[in-house]
Image (tube, rainbow, N blue to C red):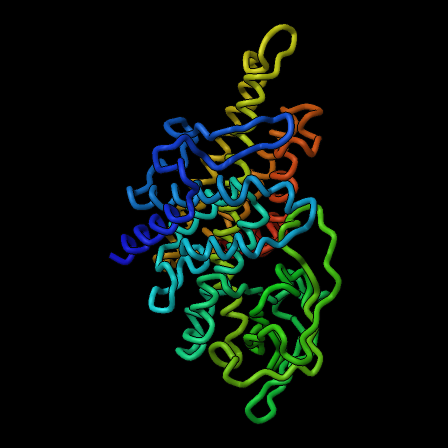
Length: 428
């Protein structure tokens, strides 16, 4: 029942946002390439890469909502946001109206109350319009879930309604300049003084930093190692909270990345999420879902890149024939499609395992993140290659899909760490 209410709410909001003259029956799919690429409507339905395969009717409805939103609100601005390094807060807030700000947050605080599989379907669809913006949205959802799952009732009621609508945006703060994969050895410290904690230290590579409103920050409150880490909510504007210069990145340019600096930053003791020493567990449990989310964003990039490549091969001619007539290119396209479907199946299987709390959910999430982000990056890179010189031009979006999804092999746990987690499970 909750699922159906969420579907109906999202569809009603989508209809209100849709311009006159468009509707559910209008030709659509979420990608509008620019420049010499012309306009492209997705045609995957019914083909071997159809992302609706295996979904329930309700999940297909959510997928349609996300695809419509990607087409209307994301893809027309994808290039501009990249070039201007613009963080599109108004568009994120529109996504919040559709329930995309708290996809798997409970509905008593404004969340959509959906499953991890539903979230994967949504993030894949959104990423066809803009990978960078959708990836930030996935991180925001991870933060909101952490508060929903581990926060007090007071924290849930204070922070989650505005996070779910995306009136406020959030950032996840674990990595430090000297502690990336070695996250259990962070040195940012929180010292208790009466009813406050005083935070000192720095966080690195924080998505949204400087422009978001709520920061979930992992700090050391106890002994060395994972057991001495706690999680705190710090609001923008808190004295002692400051930010470094915006980083210049290869991709992900529609979301700012900065250092987060804490200098005698005092926060109320009531902003401790969970209990002291629980922070590392909270951070890792958040990342299990974050890995599914970011892998889903890679699926969207690969799907869009294949669609672009199909169009290009049909239109471009060489030696008197369309490129689509050449068997070598047909085989390459078949390999790309196979990689996409294999990745999607693995991600959705891991999402189901995470939702059910399966004993092997951690290695399955790690496998899916590693395989999908590696495979989908290669699909995007192959799409660029099949476009020839045109693929290297900013006029064609395949290069942006490739740039934006490259970092997915690094964040939410590097793919080397994903291999470590899988092998550790096998050898335990």
